Amino acid sequence: MEQIILDVREQDEFAAEHIPGSIWVPLSQFGHTAPGVLQSMLGRKILLMCRSGNRAKLALEQISQLGFGAQLSVEVYAGGILEWARQGRPLVTRKNAHMPIMRQVQIAAGFGVLVSVLLGFSVDQRLAWVAAFIGAGLIFAGITGFCGLAKLLALMPWNKTGPSQDCSCG
Image 1 (cartoon, rainbow, N blue to C red):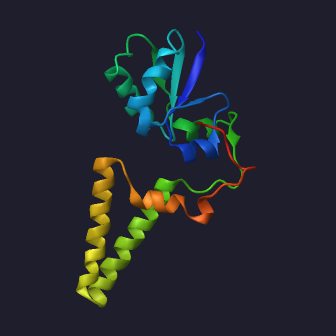
Image 2: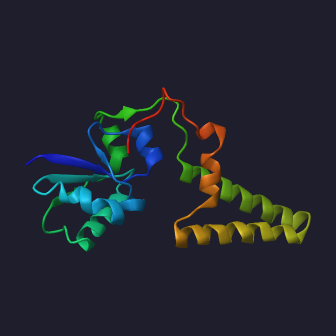
Image 3: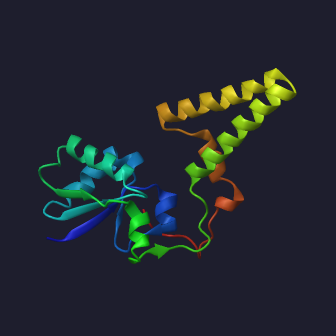
């Protein structure tokens, strides 16, 4: 039975590093994109891949919810691409890849909360409202799937890729 690797990481992660021949279907769009992709994979063994295995497990649950559980042979690659790389297996990597956008969001939001709380204690208590604003933004992003900070960070010069670095991966 032919094996297909289905990578469920986000676009910037996949573009920076992926397994040759793998198919990219991000978990954030899985419910919408996966049915068509999975339909074309009937009769093949599917190996779900993400960074460490957690998102791949969520994708496996969605495959069952979409009604493909009995029609496909699907398993999660334990340890994800981190384990794949640790074993020295082949990877396509892009030089000068930037840090994934969501990690940048976590750093920026955490820094903003920390600074606003510290300044709220030492300078002006009203500055603590900045932390509340950031928290509200994170809650909104979690509920709606839209993260304004991620969109803003994606526009930053360090997140731009030139044509020679671009990866056709999606």
